[in-house]
Length: 323
Image (cartoon, rainbow, N blue to C red; front, side, top):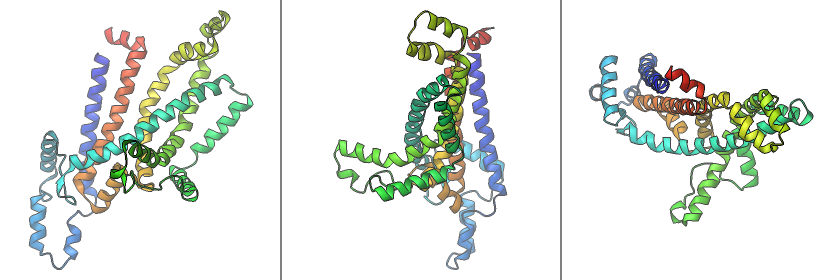
């Protein structure tokens, strides 16, 4: 348990550090939300001064940070200037949409990468393995933006997939099956883009991890005892190669999250990506800070889940912890 508690404290300190840096960078950023109001002759300077005082933009940074921590403990995460509303409810709706996209893409990417990487490791150095390596290398050097735009072009030309949004305009009038179908159709392009951006990295790591294990003596002995190929690969070889793959799982959460923000903007998916972009352009301070902290929380959560899986899968970690 000490291992997990240590990891949890690291996660907490990381979140605190990110929040402090986010506030510090707001001081370095030029201007604020109310500066554009100065250009409007119908708004008196006294009104702008009163608004700055109301939202505490005239207070020292440590005081503003302390008040933001207090609002975080109350579940508000500050106040949005543009929406005149607490930040937390605004972010949670967008975060739910982002999680729907990224979790679906995560399961699909790993579900494809594991059998494909194992298949490639079995044929290590042969023509099928080299062809797959070239294909993954091509995908690795292709920018996520190019993938998203290419999929949008295909969707426009085929007319089979929606080219933006999360649901159709008549979504509320559809049956339960129709709503599920409509949501899946709208998820299709962004999920495919995310899977294609993550899949090459996963396949190459699964292939490398499995290739190191396949010639191990215990697998050769299992083959000599007539144990079927599928059992050897998935029951014996994959658990032996699991440690680096579990560590990769936490890293892939961050990769997917960062990629999803861009793809959401390109494909008009109502997640954290477009919302944060609007907040940055509008200089909506607390929305930007809340979005950065929430994104960090997703990344930290993915890494902590990977630590839990590693603790469960590797008895050496449990032994070190007890010792």
